[in-house]
Length: 104
Image (cartoon, rainbow, N blue to C red; front, top):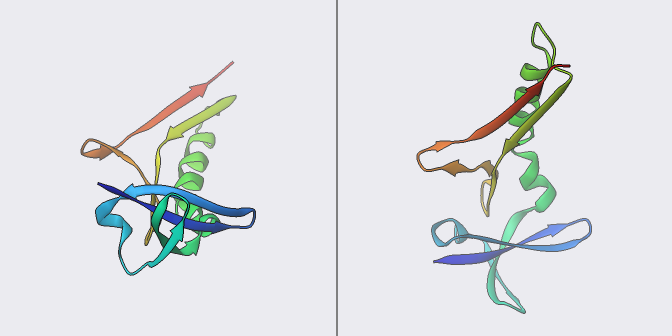
């Protein structure tokens, strides 16, 4: 089962569905129109900042190859966790990244 976690943003509130086991790690319960939700301890922007170093590292590595690509595209899933922030999502037992490099 899943819970709804409320994140604050500079533009207002964002509601994110998370797994039940991840929703109640000390978050404050908050009432909203869809029922009961956990209120995250961090803002939505702060949650997303937790994956930025991984994104930056992957992009830096791929765009600084010996033969630089003209285009670089990295596709990955991000999972929002009420306590940990954003984490890279997994597909089955391991994380999945789709990478496209284009040379012209």
